[in-house]
Image 1 (cartoon, rainbow, N blue to C red):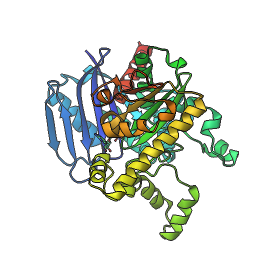
Image 2 (cartoon, rainbow, N blue to C red):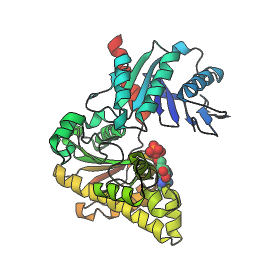
Image 3 (tube, helix red, strand yellow):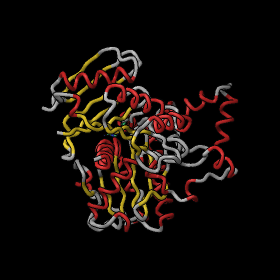
Image 4 (cartoon, protein in one colour):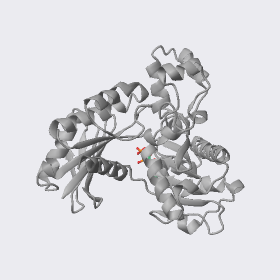
Length: 399
Ligand code: ADP
């Protein structure tokens, strides 16, 4: 049986899913948490669904990969490493270089590392994950799947910022977007559910998780998206500010006596968003609880989050000249009944109507009422499956 492993390496985490391919059956999954931070641990699900937790210091991504591979054997999930014939790595930034997924060789790996200015928190971690795998399993099909590739189709009018054009030419200063694998995957599922080719639909996909982004999909392609040069832009997120006036960055640096630009970026990436507004938590569940108890700042954070989202929906529907479907996905989009209700209740202008009973169910489904002018869906995202499918394509090319 051939197996493919999908790897999603963050700055201090490494998530994986192991698939039997081409059956697309998940046989194991897990997360290494707090890599390089005290309290590291590894959780892995075995083939019979049991969860095994291992607490031990894990200094870096190489140690994380080694532990993961060792446990796959030890827990009898695989009998031999030769069963794993492919690995797909999620890479956040592909710049303008990677319009599609790529077979990883030394040149591609260097290009991923060179793109670190575009995603300083992510690309170095992605590259370390790739290196660690190459060391242990040097001969398997190894593929990089970029978060930005799906957005390569953005038209110029949507990817250029209104700054001197030569900065785009010289430095690549433009919008690249992110979460492309997720937006592409759920849009494809949505078209299937709606029974029409994606090319004939105008869809807005709402990926609402700790990081959140919104994409307008027209003619089967990404047409506009809310994240920007980096994932910092767009709507209010768990800890990221989303869009702000660039002058405020300079003003705050002066007020806070910040001389290192990295420090202000840390504030905007890690201390802002729902956390910064509410002053209590980056987790929307905590904020909803607090708002129900009458906490003004919690309610305000929710109102701003919702307002940001409906503003994007309004502008994207206008840009596309219509709207057939809206998709909710990721942690908040898939799980939060009240947030879906709040967001859709503000879309009366598009004659969006929610079916309350369907909204409260779980799994992939429509949640709009029969007479809603726009079909609204909840579609659990599966970036790992999309990654594993891309690896299969390359395996076939090599056959
Ligand atoms: P990531 O961006 O890390 O992949 P996820 O898509 O897993 O994030 O989403 C995680 C986020 O989803 C958390 O910040 C959590 O607040 C939020 N979340 C998960 N379940 C719910 C829920 N029932 N209600 C509100 N928020 C939720």
